[in-house]
Amino acid sequence: MAYEINFTLKTTVPNFSEIEIIHPSAECFLFDMDGTLIDTEKYHAEAIVKTIQELENNFDYSKCGITKRFLGMPDNTVFETLKIEDGLFRNISFDEFVESKNKSLVLTLKEESLHGVVAKGIVELLQELKSKNKKIGLVTASEKSITEVSLEQSGLLPFFEIIVTRNDSEKSKPHADPYLLGMNLLGANPSQTIVFEDSFNGMSAAHCARVSGIIKASWF
Image (tube, rainbow, N blue to C red):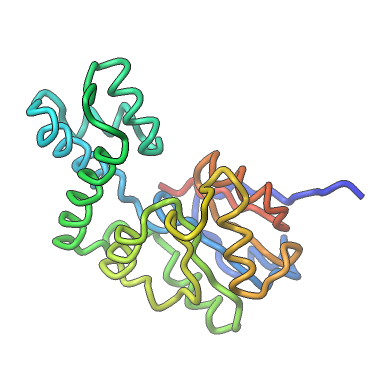
């Protein structure tokens, strides 16, 4: 029997009743973080600018320029593009770049209240899912340190039964591993699992994990 997936594009966060119409048997809900729950692009851009300043002593880059150029792109793509196209980081490894960027990002996030960048309607949806005893998990490609501070500063941490970060599986998105791990930790069946994602890599990972449905987050 061929595997079929229910794909839904949403420009606003749906309520449970809307989801139930499309996915009546859903019992497990897995959420991506950046771009789905919270909009942290400006903080990532600021961290990249500070990393370029720190590692290259180059002050020619702006937060606005980095955001426009690398919106939604993973760290490895940002690093390789800056290295190949801009001639940066010739004597610096990707691991060094990520370590510097994440250190700057964590420090910035700790100083911010992220309640204002939480997607409108997300808190209400999570509250509704929790009240109905649904299984709720977070599956993100962000590192553990960034995930923890982001959830704490946004007030979303208490909603999640399990959290899967980049550090928890050998392969990250677009591979299925993170979502398979999330479902395993929750004791959930893919046929009853719905994933909320905003990126191509994330949706590819969910599809490979053979979940019942994907809700494409296009509300930011």
